[in-house]
Image 1: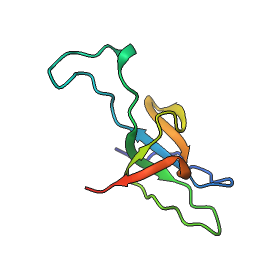
Image 2: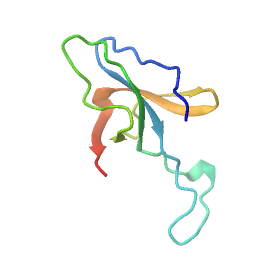
Image 3: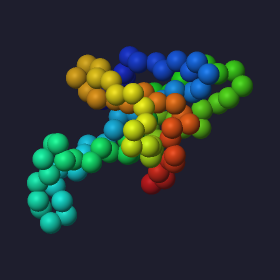
Length: 97
């Protein structure tokens, strides 16, 4: 993936751009789940992080896999890909591999 030309702006909180994981399209037993019934993913990969707060360094970094709330962030589509822009405080955990 080439470098994405989006830079989150912190404002009063660090902001994070996350690429959500794909929703499950099949159950473990092989049943295909229609789009309307697919569960919204709650984890994804950090693509960009704001770093313009003077007093606070971001906890997450680009490349981290994170868990976030089901309705966290604002959905946006940029250059044909779906992303979520969220406050760093909307992220619950970093998944260590």
